[in-house]
Length: 84
Image (cartoon, rainbow, N blue to C red; front, side, top):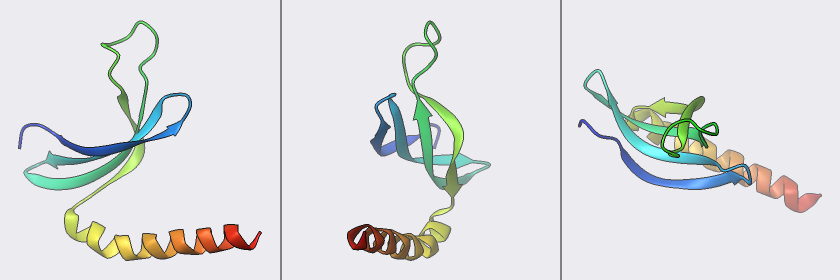
């Protein structure tokens, strides 16, 4: 897999930061990568968002184990928000 497949992105802030979910490959292994992208500095590049170090790249089996825990944390955060 020579190219990365982007599944989607969510705008994080008005400063044009986005969180992008993509499929990547490294050393022959595939990873699901969730990473913060930012707009390039003025005058640099072609205007395409640039990946930052802020993100998480894991093999699919590790995401499968992690997703239920993330869902529990989101539900707890939503519940705490409703209570305030």
